[in-house]
Image 1: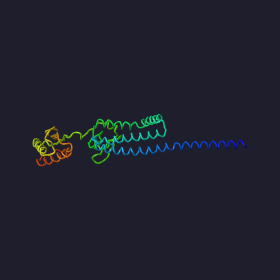
Image 2: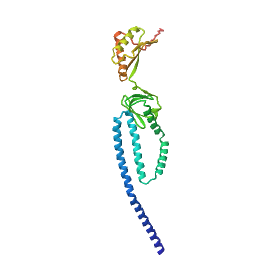
Image 3: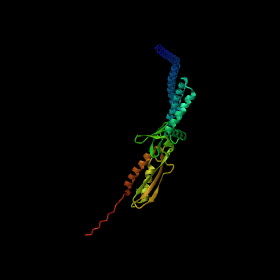
Image 4: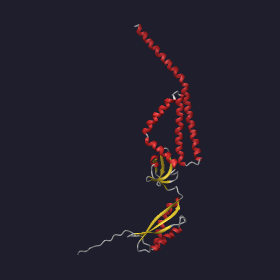
Length: 283
């Protein structure tokens, strides 16, 4: 019985010794823990200040607006990664272990997020090649809209009917992109059909008069209006006029409306589909 009590007492003493050592270790580690926590908080505050200064600097810079959000995202990721690494180092975690963990995590994340990484790479390609900028009206794989922003993962478009479309950067970098805003001028092409009963030179003169009187149509290059083709149902007059890019749709619709009014005044007939029905009376 005494031996059993002695054994229990020894266990109790060893437990008390272990708890004392654990408490001593913890109290000795508390300053390091507090230091790491303080530095993490300071680092977070500094990062926010840096991001604000970066935002102001980008607004004053000559960099395209589409680059701002992309650079801000990359800088933010880099700054917070740096703060976390410094905090872990202060806590006494060996740098080799941090690198090993980051490498393993990076590999796992890379395998799981191949599409996202391709979008990031696509974003870099877009910023380097610059196929468009903020405010440009573009067509990307039959998706049309005005470019509002290029983020790390997606390109943000606003459609004419005010819908927001997010196109993955990986898709954008590999797509056929039509930029309608890059050039300062564009050519408006239209075709007007008249009936064979009309005198085509009279119709051609009416079209040229409309073109010459329109103030938004440029005189250089010289406007073009000629008979394009003669088909079974109509004579087709083609026009090609140059305008400032911002005036494209105004001129396009104006020409359609004004030429129709001119044809009506001149009595020029616009052909329409007709169906001839022959009735046979057997009675």
